[in-house]
Image (cartoon, rainbow over all chains, first blue to last red; front, side):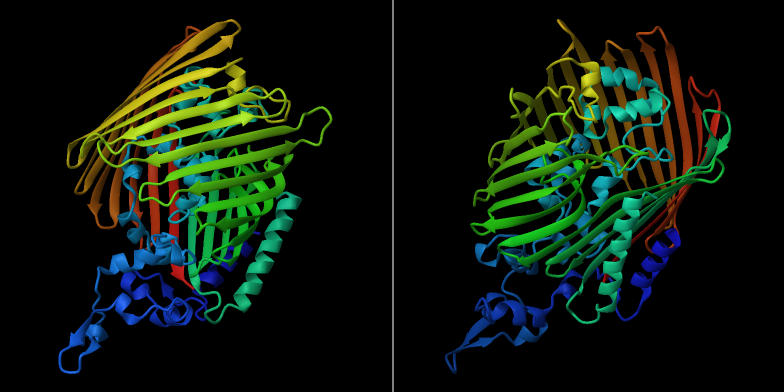
Length: 197
Length: 422
């Protein structure tokens, strides 16, 4: 079974016809103009001036694209243009993909946009509140494996949630705040050790 | 591997191989994220025999560029060749399809059901979700099976579940978020009752002075006779650019149920727990952050006696240039005893691809059983970034505690992460 999984993973990662490149770290390069023309601009009646610079030609009295249009000159910061549709700012574009990884395709890009509350030293305890209120937002950046890593995995090589010594004083902490254990464990976990199962 | 897990996994790979064959073209263009996390250790077990636990975790997430189709998988293997033990864990395997991005989504598989269900449990479910009012209002429902959480019996059926959930966010720059969930648990056993649980809450951030974020969350067992299971209120206050307050109040009352999985809380308490906690964080320097937190708990130990628990923690985090470290000092006090401890973790970037790691953890405890002991953990290690996305950690470990006076271990960890456009 394990060989099959490793073989499959290798096929997915290295087969040339379906794996183009490692995800780009240039967010600007993620923008597919043809895709947007096909799926968005025509349907939503969005013209070039929404993003690009235009100016009035005094000779012809016509609105002409900026000379720099070919080199993508924008009338707003590029980030603002993307976010106006892709972060739910404008209701008309609620169907646009909202997940941050739509454009931020590398872990380094994701780290750069980490929310401020994640830096709080108590975030490990406080994140449960955010997950209950708006957990789907977490999936804009995170894989569910990051929840599984702490909440489900049980390995004692590199303890994640408790220190190595926790086992020796956990009876004291469990009696100080008995409700905390319920976040990840049930009493069967206690029985496995204490009754030798 | 358990038969049910094997069947689910085989079906998953069959679907994936089929997709792989028809993948060429833009239809399934998207992002594939893959992580492989491997742990190994050589150490003496409690029976003083040598053991070599090996853990292998694989996680994959695939999403088309328009997020109309998503797949997630997360599995784990365990093996100890010296003791002849092995195990397999199927944590997550799910698929989500959104045929109408503005309106409708459906999903099926094994989930760590955090967002839709009342409890964060592992469930095998099918469900669907609807969106209205420009996706400000969402509502959905699911049906399935709840799985047992703990090792050794992972995929056993705990209960049949069905539930509905809904959330609404107001169209403001600082919106209110309201959510309401309902869960029905049927143990299908005449000896065990059916459970009906509801959870609801509200969250809002306010502009202006201190930018407070406030929330209210409650969980109620509505099965007759109904009772409050949990009520939590709290606020985060950003009092200045350098400081943050976090205040919480909690009422907790998870009674021993008639089901097969009882909460640990019910082992220690026969009634309601009240908790008040506060944390203050202050940025002393650009790269030095301090935090102090305090928590007070009061609960019914044995009727009519109530008891208290106290927790105090002081953290210091430093990160500048090639050096970063975290130090945590804590003190716990309960009727079970008291414990002092200090934990220091240091990292030093020796070169672009080499990082040194050191950890020292010392705890002294006095238990109500008159046991007075200390426990020591020391772990030096070295981290290599072998090439892009591969990381290898090699570490040694020394522990001294009331189980093993001299406990030496060798640890290894290999991580591979890949984000790839397909």
